[in-house]
Image (cartoon, rainbow, N blue to C red; front, side):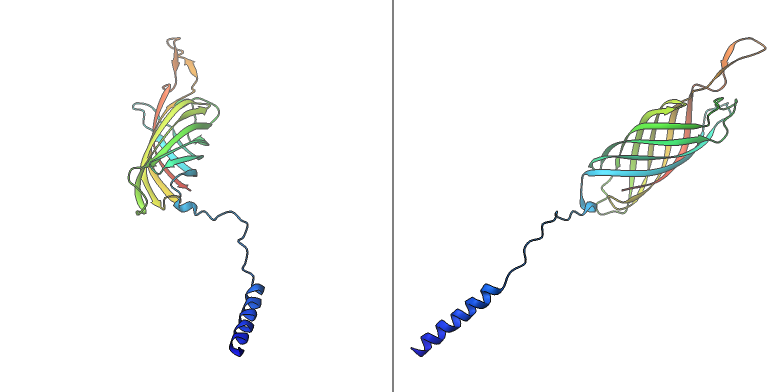
Length: 199
């Protein structure tokens, strides 16, 4: 009988001890998301560029600029977005462009992606295609091919690009023939280099 009483006493004490122990409540905060591992979502890029015109038999313009682009990553092979920036022509004169404003402001639609997955590689080839309108110039498109160095969501971009650009140029009257002529062709072709960072 003593053994049963001691057993009841021990069970009562264990019940008291466990009743006083409170487990911590689950915190009321959003679940942590590691954006590095996401295969889709928003992206942002900052890029600088420098290039030169390559129109044969003409004085060519050199220009440099920068832009920002952002959009949505469908997957690592296709990202869609929009961008804007500013370009400055170094030699803005009557033989090149004949426009008093040496700055242009491009606004464009951006598509980009990688050619092979960057899941297990730090260096992969990438492509980009921009199409839009530049204030003080006109319609343009610009494909780029290059390399991405880094991770899927944080990478340095190094690329070579071609730009077809309509040029907003003035016409002049040739004093010898009295015929109106374009100083520079209406369309320009530029080759350049782009360096940027995308996350």
